[in-house]
Image 1 (cartoon, helix red, strand yellow):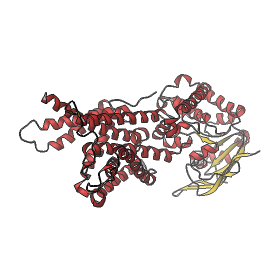
Image 2 (image 1 turned 30 degrees about the horizontal axis):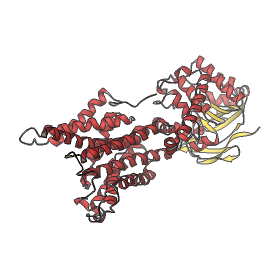
Image 3 (image 1 turned 90 degrees about the vertical axis):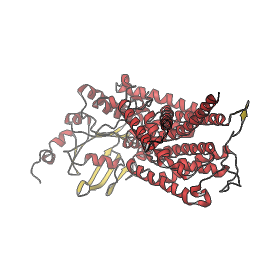
Amino acid sequence: MNSALSVRSISKSFGGLRAVRECSLEIAEGAITGLIGPNGAGKTTLFNIICGLFRPDSGNVHLRGRDVTGQPAHRLFHRGVVRTFQIPHEFAGMTVLENLMLVPAGQSGENVFRAWFQRPRVRREEHAIVKRAHEVLDVLQLGQLSGELAGNLSGGQKKLLELGRAMMSDAKVVLLDEPAAGVNRTLMKTLNAAIRRLNTEHNYTFCIVEHDMNFVRRMCNPVVVMAEGATLAQGTMDEIMADQRVLDAYLGGRRA
Amino acid sequence: MELLLGTGNYLVFFLTIVSVYALLALGLNVQWGYTGILNIGIAAFFAVGAYTSALLTAPATAQPPGLGLPVAVGMLAAMPIAGILALGIGLITLNLRSDYLAIASIGIAEIVRLFLKNEEWLTNGVRGMAGIPRPFAGVEVFGWNAGGALYLGLGAIIVATVFIALQILYRAPWGRALRAIRDREVAAEAMGKNVLWFRLQSFVLGSAVMGLAGAVYAHFVGFISPEAFAPLFATFIVWVMLIAGGSGSNLGAIVGALAIWAVWSVTELLGRIPEEPIAGFGALRVFLIGLLLQVILLLRPQGIIPEPRE
């Protein structure tokens, strides 16, 4: 299977703390890859490196065979990688609709002179974007909240909004950092359905960091386990759960 | 009749100054209100705009000699020159965190002021530049000196034009991207927005508007010196105007300029009532403005006219 993203022996230290050590990982095209591991395993740091928030000390990241190591997040977005955040990063002072309308790339109204002198064109684009945003809101069942300030949403709704922003982009590789944390059961169903649909109908590739094992079992295949900054095991959820090294990592068993 | 004319003239003078401050507050609103850029060096761009227009339009016989170009040219040139200064400063400082940018901007404003003070060949130093052309000066309508009123009209047209232009940008995707950056820089970056580039645009555009304010000021008073661009009048009070008026709101910036300048002027008139000048009255006025700001922030933290939310 082709790799959408491949991470090759990445290391990153913060002062004396080696958060990621020689970590390698393949994210297969069209799959929903789960990334699990105990707290402090380096999952979010690895996400931040892949997304260009941090530059690794060594190693590199390839996107469909192309080296994208250390490229700034906004450039990776245009190459087709989009992420969500563990702690929701909504634009609190903007409405739910505006949060989504911000996302699409190449809006001519983002250019000062076009905003002033090509208003009909900008208006046409805005119409199309509003329409698309409403479709996304319908899928996520957030339609009735479109005019609400994003800062007023519940934690779970903010998570959905983050997924919605990813859906507004043309990016086909989506990294979700704990999408299920703090989401209630009803919202969770919506969230799962949306991820499934994007994966099967629109061929999105996902990489999901998650602690909710039921969620991972239901959604992800393969599952990659990280511990102490490196990948420990990879396989289906059942294979993973049968792996003694994984149990040791989680339960703090004896070291091999 | 005398009194009526006097009041009228005072009102014209008052409103012209308000239009200068409205432009400064609008420029600051693009930087702080839209994008969250903490610029405490407003005076630098204000001064550069004023001196640019003065040097371009003053007659060749003036001290220092000017180029004698039309006032419109001076006003239009003030914007790009202030913008270029902002571009240079922004490239160095805009990737700093906002509090560091604030410190850098204070320093840069001081550098500009010292430059104006010391480069006498260009600016005539502390003696200042006199003989800056004042459009409409001495124009009479039915025996009434209408120069001031006409210039106020010009100022009002400029403020209205800038207001409309900025309002369009606020509502456009450009403004939306800036507000997103203000709310969550990291997320805006993750959504593909080139944060540094947008911040640079916002900083340059806001500074260009401040430069225009400088030109409008220079052609109103006809004389400028580095003293006119001291931090109190050229930076501090503009911040008070924007915060009181409602940062993020262009209308708020204009209303804030009007309200705060009204308070400032009224307290000055109060100081003239007693026969003997009151010691420390100047300091008391600054204190009153600060107090007013506190009251507004407590009662209406969003300002007099809050930022519109859709």
